[in-house]
Image (cartoon, rainbow, N blue to C red):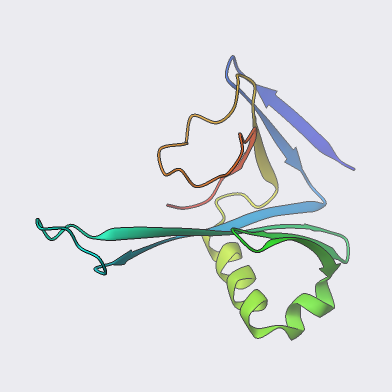
Length: 124
């Protein structure tokens, strides 16, 4: 594996030439159960993809994790759609950041069920 690391006091940025790290973050707004002030609710969703060789690791919020072949991913219309979208949103698909202090500072969405120490550089 061909990789480099660039670190500062908070994060270590790993660049791995033969692996791809991409993701899609969805924020859906709905008006169901609006309170008296008409406030809306939100649903958050994400799809993580890590591709190495012919294998792809996928993680989907509230669904789970799976490792499949890239050919199998391409056969599934839903997975392939989000994978292609994640590639378009990637700032650098070969880069991943490791938080060095107690988990991510990006926790204002209450997106994860557990503390995260890794993040992917993607467009917002």
